[in-house]
Length: 574
Ligand code: ATP
Ligand code: MG
Image (cartoon, rainbow, N blue to C red):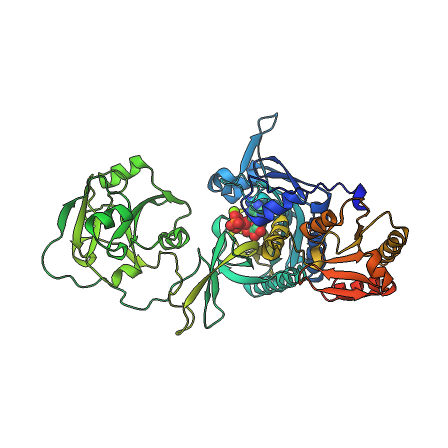
């Protein structure tokens, strides 16, 4: 492609409303364009990167035995009511009414649609296993769309669904997808880690997330210093070490203290001159199983995924002011476990010490010298807090958890019979017995993979695309387009690369070399071949590798072959 005719308009200035590097660079390199909050167009350079990722995904999914389908983006409300998610999915599901008054949604995921197909098409164990996938637009009305296409409202996902006769076979399908994902992300040139994860609203009982490691990632990963345990923050367990019961209390009583207007941990601790570890935070939650109070140390955070599991509830959110007042007789900031009448769950770390300062269930009052064993009633003691760097590993005895940041690019779930039971997707087994199909589901955020790759490798000069997903792996850069020898040599090299199937750019613009070099760096072309009059006098052109910055001087006749041999290193199909 000639640079002069590309629909590529690079920007020198940093776009103001972009927070992370990948978003800034994708805008500066003319890859994407915002239409509305969380809704983006892909321009040619961006789409080419996206297509490269899709090609790798298709090849690996097909190799793993999955077959491609294309399901509708618009989904009738009925199937969501059948699965029970019409009421559970919440505001991320964008719903609308058609002209006949029918309820519809824009698909945020496709478990219902695929289960509807499979329950009609699959009848017998002979029809199984099956694995169907698609690459398609999803819509999620995210509460905080940000980072460009990384957390968009409309985005492209590869989603796959597996169907098996029993758990053993479903396990094999899951493992095959796990391996396919490892292949996909390796071939995309990413540094990544598979971590244990919570299943969230998709459901099921087991899942792994594939995280691209990047300091700016939204997700925290807890990874053991000694063994292979790694989990996301929602899921990361903490080894239960000390006592499983509260400390024994001395005789005596707690004391009421006046804490006017002191609502936050920080305010109360400063006012009473105590450490956050000596205070208990009491958070009131509304759930589908009624109100519940969660107690954690002042320096710890409640982990809502853990709390949801412990409570066995489907929905869980922080109670509003009115519910707090009703259940604690005090405004927000003064809730405490003493005398509380709702279900109370204490974090296990609270068993390590005492006494504590707690909210007084009365405006402007806290209680000090509270011993949970003596003064409060708790229903459950369990691990309900976020793991922290330094916590003991739940798998091995010697390791400590380390916290690293990542970007979730893929997520695989064992769904079990959640959807097949709810939607009656059954098959006849070898003994003629009717059984629910065992399902799994497997997602990859295709756009997010592109953004994550940019995030992982970018430097001060711009993007550094891994070769396998670079829109154009090679650029030929004639320094002076008015020099006929330079231009003829550049064009010969360009033609040869194109003939060999390499997507190549020739920067034929009559602009200052500095501008060309800056653009080549910004758009992250992995190999730049600079053709200049001075080099040609010595019989060479220069090949600069974007990632390492190393420069090789090579004869013009040999340079195409050199680039092709380098590109083969990453298993590309050139
Ligand atoms: P997240 O926790 O980031 O919201 P999720 O758990 O909701 O992700 P899944 O339902 O597992 O995501 O979707 C599969 C994949 O789709 C994710 O691993 C991610 O790569 C991608 N994805 C999810 N939400 C978005 C989004 N809003 N924008 C872009 N990609 C997304
Ligand atoms: Mg999400």
